[in-house]
Length: 262
Image (cartoon, rainbow, N blue to C red; front, side):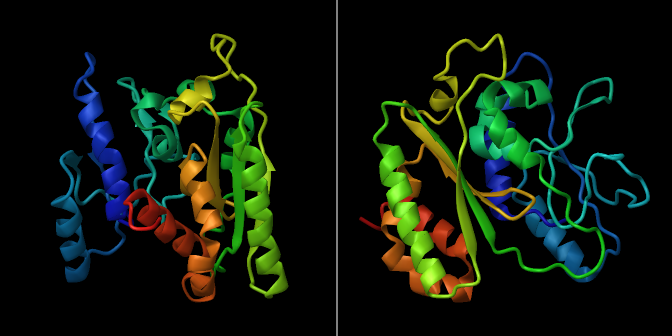
């Protein structure tokens, strides 16, 4: 039942969007809980109050609804199932985070059509161990792609290098890297090479910050706001050790989006 309010807010536009489709599409939340307690019940009721979709409570943990596709531990997943109960995508949450309703109907084919191949391969990731202690993952990757005519790539790499140099010279226990992903088509039917850029409502490029071997998305956009976060590194760098690189980055990102920072 580890779904955040932020993740619920990401799914709400999807809930509204699929209601306008001709075919009947439904969202059903199935909280997987090993032992129901009073605290767990209170958390369930709080989350339930924020969800407009169907909810199935008391689902038996002995039933493996995802088969071999993924672990149910610690992270919410969005499994896309067709009317024949065939899995169309084992976890469409990352795609939904990045593209929203533009990725409809959230199948594996839709992912291939909208997401660059290198980024999809990055997101296949490595499964975390399902038992034993988990270490804090302090590895971060900026996956990005910019059009040939964009001036953002040079600015992005300049600011990224400044941040990386600071982290390395100050002995912070963090590893950040950048990975340029060539914007090549992965679907023969998709002839327009600018389709991905339009997915971010941009003609210049895109950047997605990911954390750890699982490739968990921290933030992603057309590169403009993420670039501003890097440019404002002096504002949040002193908090990285205490709160973590991803939390500080996301906090600055959200404040910039809300107009709370210049």
